[in-house]
Image 1 (tube, rainbow, N blue to C red):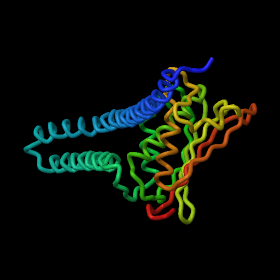
Image 2: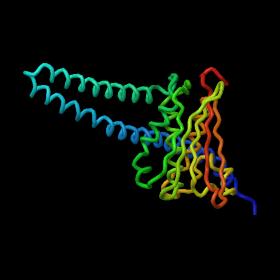
Image 3: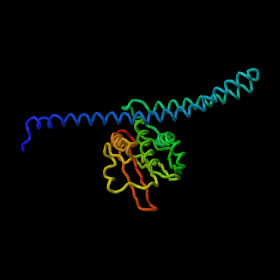
Image 4: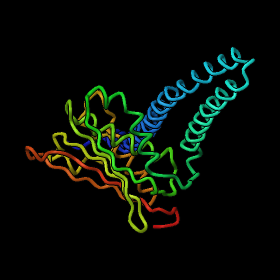
Length: 256
């Protein structure tokens, strides 16, 4: 039996609406994940700021108590200055991470990797994960720091989720002549071959209700926006199981 014109028209008219809705939903979820990472980073920064702030408060009290002892006041004032320098450094670093998405500046990649690890420090500690770091400090690249922080955070979060108690997480930063390379590796169960081709697809997830399936898709998009590449290696073979993601980005924004 032939379809009625109304049915055919309905199908043709509804398809673009469904696609637009899917794109809108994807954009909303992408933005939501950006806000989640920003919120996690903000919580980490507040935790790190709390210590120096408390020290400043205590040192100010001691200075007032020792107002008649110039030598002791000088000692406490020097210590207070050190805490203020720490606070200023944290403030500047945070602002550099979340400037306009159009702004790219040369930044030490190890600094971003360390910040991403601090975001997930509680989860790392809770699972008693063995953390191995090889972060070369003199590797800098022209990137949007907030975006790359999101990429590193996504990869580290995925690795932590894949790891069992007492598993191993390895993060390394190195450079070649014109690229910075960041590797995030774990000795989790590995990614099964049937799903490996889909891991960068939007909305594809194996985490059920815990995941949106956008982490790797967004990460790939950000890396490619920086004219870089993201690759994976994985094995499910017993005693050799694990997954590694490697990001390669040009040292200069004008490269590529």
